Image (cartoon, rainbow, N blue to C red; front, side, top):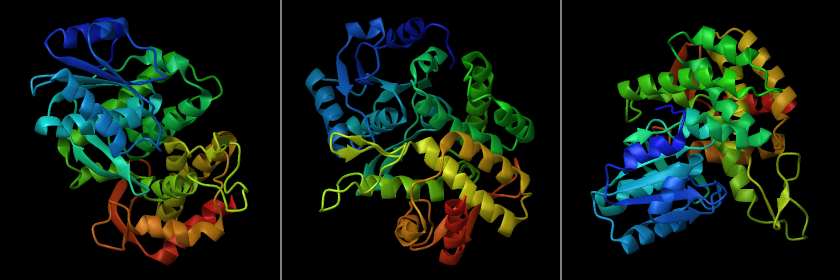
Length: 361
């Protein structure tokens, strides 16, 4: 639900439970209502999105004596809600939880649909469960605190939703592509967020466990996840001679490590590659590819991988959890805006061709 007052919205829900625990990204200011309940503060990043962090949540829930009648309230971005939801799904075989997304990415994607999970052995969200929150509370006020990179990352998922949403998609695509990313007017963005959330809710209601229709939401993710995973793998160390493996305006040094590509950036790059395949394989018009390419180059920059990384990227793609058979590469492509086609198996050579297109821009 969308709300105007985050404190009142939280009180209305937590007031129904005797046992409540809050878990939040330690960088997020907590609403006053949380002071009445135990709080778990989590250092959140793709590097910490693993079993150790979930264990910290489990341990605190056990320390408070929470029963299966309790409520876990997760306040943070997508990585936090993914982990908290997975902890709720598995603690005593399941307790109720509420998602309070604080980033644009989490509002339009991660907190809606019930996908929870953690990264495992360098692979995105490899371990997880379908376990929807009893409520998702969206307060646009959080967006005023976000840096530009976070807003651009979230907008990548908005672009994806506008491309694959089957109802009124062309109108939404036009509105999204006209939105002024320089100004980032929150008031103008709110109705776009609401429309994206409503579209995802319709898709998830029709296919809650991603057996068919819900796969349209994977557009851009087969290629995008590979980019994230190669960065997750390589961000954990420097070369033996001490030189930096990756360095750019997006990937910068931080405590002797490199930060990881934002998810929405990876999705934008992945959509470029998959739009290219949509044009050459599925008869998609060239205009969406041309328009998104202009947006990418102006706002997101170029990916910092290159043709030398193709074989490594292919290995990640062949291990993707979306593949229905070992070693294949499964994508969602589109015939046009609002006309997604799922379960499109592409060959390694087709994937290499798409990577080459993306890296040539």
